Amino acid sequence: VWWLDGTEGERQEALRRREERVLAEQELSNLLARRDHGKAIRLAIQLEQPQRLFSLLSQFAAASVDLNEAVGRVRAILREACQPAQLVAILGHLRAWNATMRRALPAQIILRASLQIIRPALAEESDMA
Image 1 (cartoon, rainbow, N blue to C red):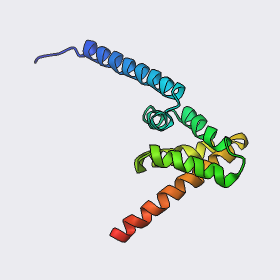
Image 2 (image 1 turned 90 degrees about the vertical axis):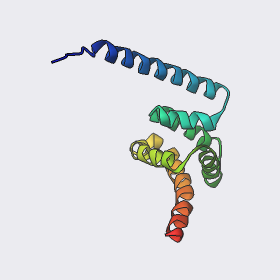
Image 3 (image 1 turned 90 degrees about the horizontal axis):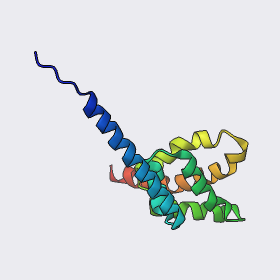
Image 4 (image 1 turned 180 degrees about the horizontal axis):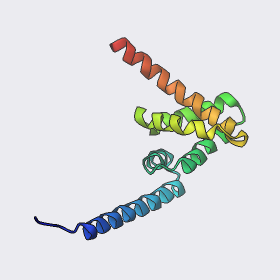
């Protein structure tokens, strides 16, 4: 029976993943500083950082005085930045975001904008079937 100690390999793999995550988080900070919001949204979803994602999306919602304008701004950035799978990830985070009163209005704006993007896509899929 041959026995292979994989502890060192696992340790190296964990270190590599940690370094990749740190580099990705640094890249996210750089994207935010450059105001490259589309790439920052995609990276925040990929890194599973719902707080940063909420903060970024709520900035678009807060930049408008009119509710419809806020929904339009959020919809535009989501349409530019997200694929359908990423929108589903955002919908998964919305439940937690909508649970507190101070986050409810931005969360509702993000929800409405997301559904306005998803609804036509679902209609197209059902027409094709």
